[in-house]
Amino acid sequence: MPELPLHAKLTVDVGALAANWQALARACAPAECGAAIKADGYGLGARMVLETLAKAGCRRFYVAHWHEVPPLLPLPEGVTVAVLHGVMPDEIGAVLDLPAVPVLSTPAQVAAWRATGRPCEAMVDTGLNRLGLAPAEAPGLLAGLDLRVLHSHLACAEEPGHPLNEVQRQAFADVAARVPAAARALANSGGIGLGRGWHFTLTRPGIGLYGGGAGPDGGRLRAVAGLSARILQLRDVPAGATIGYGATFTAGRHSRIATVALGYADGYVRALGNRGQALAGGIACPAAGRVSMDLAAFDVTDAPGLAEGDWLDIDFDLPRVAALTGRSQYELLTGLGGRYARVCR
Ligand SMILES: *Cc1c(COP(=O)(O)O)cnc(C)c1O
Image 1 (tube, rainbow, N blue to C red):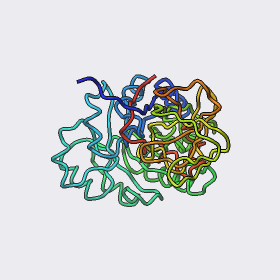
Image 2 (image 1 turned 180 degrees about the vertical axis):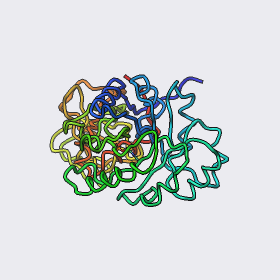
Image 3 (image 1 turned 120 degrees about the vertical axis):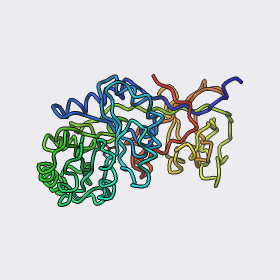
């Protein structure tokens, strides 16, 4: 059977992805730099991200669920994967065949995993109050385990001036001094920017790899994800015509409207209706009307020469789209959905 058409394209700039990891790794050195590739590599494709970053030198990868491990196999030589959700005591039998280790975060998980005699990682909670052992109980509970990494996770890493950053740094340093582990990790992408005191011996950036958030020096990292969608139909409308559900856009002049195959089911969120833009050879083409589930319309009057079937680049610049929509850059990336042709460049 011939390959069926897809009308939306997610282009991943693998050079930018590798360059972002290298920039973060340089900022962490001599600490090691890992990578968070949960949620299918923040929506971009976990296997492709792992292969790209392993070639760039990354050795440790983090997913959330055990279900995220099999698509990564076989792992490149020297690469390890750890599962941030840990493993519930009644699930251990189901995961023992996988080449991944849990990040344990409750006393019950630690006790059940100890019986396997296998290596593991562990999370202590230093103030996020999400997952993790209490610092006071951690040294006793973890004694004698083959502990590859002791982790904690920051609550306010994106706000460098927040007092909780220093409180968590100190709390983690205190517990790390009492728990023998081969490596110690506190910082996500934002934590790397807080400085050397937060790097310990390993970091776990996610969003920065994919071009989001602030870079380690406060500047921007390189954009990695690009969206484009096919023009399914072009129509000329007179001044006064309205476009789309609710008739929320009225053409102020005789206009050319492109209807493209991209909607809120593809993560092109409704808040981009009448706010987003497409880019035709650098010419801005504003969104015209509401975003539908599978379609969006753009005013391409100022970009002559477009034809039905052409691919239109859709502006998905993370900081700009986050500001326009009130969504976090994390939500925007991980919401992209499964209806894209994913291509690398
Ligand atoms: C998601 C996650 C990360 C990566 O965070 P970013 O803010 O995307 O850099 C690191 N550590 C843990 C425990 C996480 O859950």
